[in-house]
Image 1 (cartoon, rainbow, N blue to C red):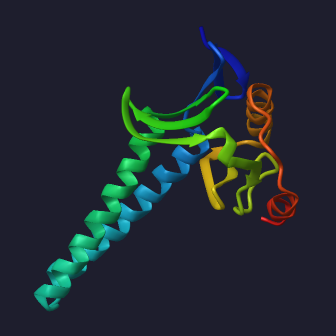
Image 2: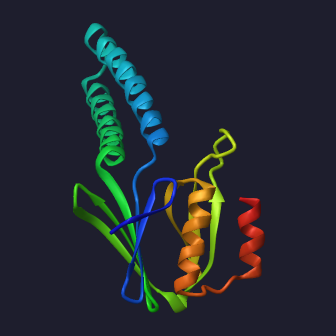
Image 3: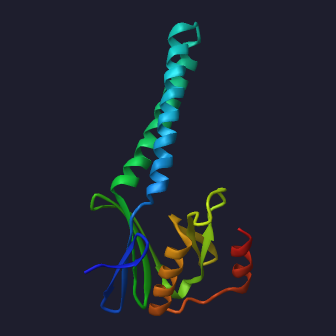
Length: 182
């Protein structure tokens, strides 16, 4: 049975570890919907211009393909915001992060706990309110990794605290400095 961890986060114990579900952020969904509406308006203006002026057909085709590709990307992001979730599974040996849409697993990353260090919340660089979302970042085999780029600091701190109860990830002092300047 899933219990509330903080904000949108739900968690449960699993044998030797934890499983945490992170649904998408509603504020991000609204922002994506705004961009879709704005993009549709720009696309409509472009289509009007294409059909009412003499532009080379290759340029027209390129413009149409570009507009369609961006629209599809925005629609996919909105669909993710409505039906997607991130699942984190942590036990004494590995950290697993998977993205799902309507129960279908889209991708999964698995990291050996011994290779993970410097687990940190890094706020978004967007100029927003104080509770602005950010992401959880860490270093794995000298590569910077991140997940859930729309998590609040309160949610992130609760998640990191819960993760540290399962496995004590090492902290790299250089990473501490880096995370505060990001």
